[in-house]
Amino acid sequence: MYLIVGLGNPEEDYRNTRHNMGFDTINKISEEYNIGVNKKKFKGLCGTGVIEGEKVILLKPQTFMNLSGESVKEVVDFYKIENNDIIIIYDDIDIDLGTIKIRKKGNPGSHNGMKSVVKYLGTEFPRIRIGIGKPEDGDFIKYVIGPIPEEEKEILDRSTTLAKDATIEIIKQGVDNAMNKFNKKEG
Image 1 (cartoon, rainbow, N blue to C red):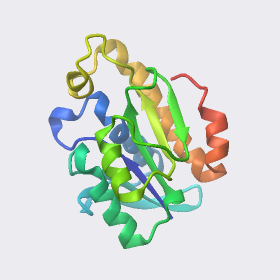
Image 2 (image 1 turned 180 degrees about the vertical axis):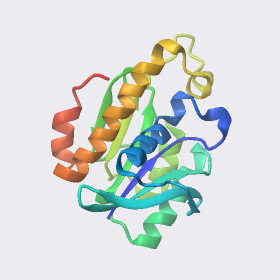
Image 3 (image 1 turned 45 degrees about the vertical axis):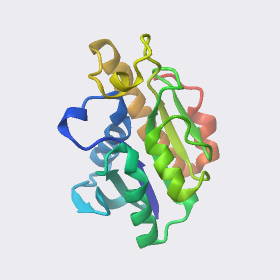
Image 4 (image 1 turned 135 degrees about the vertical axis):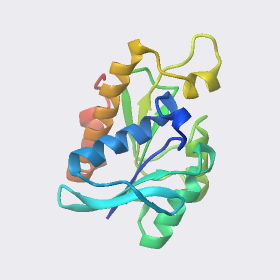
């Protein structure tokens, strides 16, 4: 069983922001595999289904970004999921806009949601980072939770589609194959 987590913020105000790329990717996976992500459980919205013959849980923590790990930990403990069967999807300012990166492990960087996840899981679990680039004016908070400019919407939409495809590739062929296939692609 895989746990696939998209990080984001739950309120409507955050819906179309760079910080919700994880939620947007979960929505695409949900739609493609007809998995409703509407059960309120584990401090999140979740749904179960099957992707490529593997049982999966899709999760969108509803704790707000900085406490995402609490929701993830509840699911992991309840279902006894191993770290290598967890995929965390999130936005990353340290990666160029339109690019995704898959890693098997690593530190959380400056991402507060990942800091929370790492607090509960450690650093060894697959993750898909969706590049959102950096703000020119240095205002990171406004940049990640402010509205996405029109000229970036299509790029980020392609990036979340790439992240969805990368998630499916991890399930089908493993994280190493997914890294080889997706780590050089542009959105």
